Length: 307
Image (cartoon, rainbow, N blue to C red):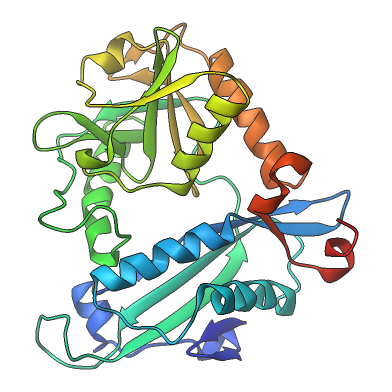
């Protein structure tokens, strides 16, 4: 089952025409939202649901997409969809808002806007026990070309080029530079370097997506590990001298990097900071850390009432 334009319908009815504007031109925006199954509590927790939908509506604003939904109604439909699908495992929700007219012509104005939400089982998107990365020859797309702070469907072609190049070159994942040659992101993940006792991450001006998992890592590093986090420009060679490197995102979760361009990161194994952040993260998203329960939206009411 999925949710489409205000209705819960069987998944096989959730289709669009091949002439749809969003399909032909990439004129849509999306989110990726994870839900984590807690076996002991028989509960799914949807992680930072509110922040994801706040970002979706900001992306819509950039793309001139108008939806008849509030953040609250989007949250409610997400919980209800997982319930109706009777899912009892880790899940991935993908809300997509897109230009729905069946016309030829590139523009954003004067077009109908539609919305689809799906929910399906999902495990790890990338290896979380140690990634081997290569710096991509493809540069991160600039905010003045396609805004990086919005999750625009068409812009992910940029990530696809980098990811395929990395895989075909024998790596697990890509690290992308911006047009000035500074470190920007992974193919679809934010990046952190740990060196000289602090976490360093590219600033918003480096053509990054303002990631929700990125914000989570920053808060956990500061509040739980007492580590200073600094946003600044990062040069490529710093990747080769860092003590630890982490990629993070809703799909990637928290994924330590153990090698860049065939150079070992630190000792060449998952480091202590990455391991601590990963352990904290998985406790929180599965609802096992009451301090961060506001980040976790329970799906099934019988457990929610006990919290």
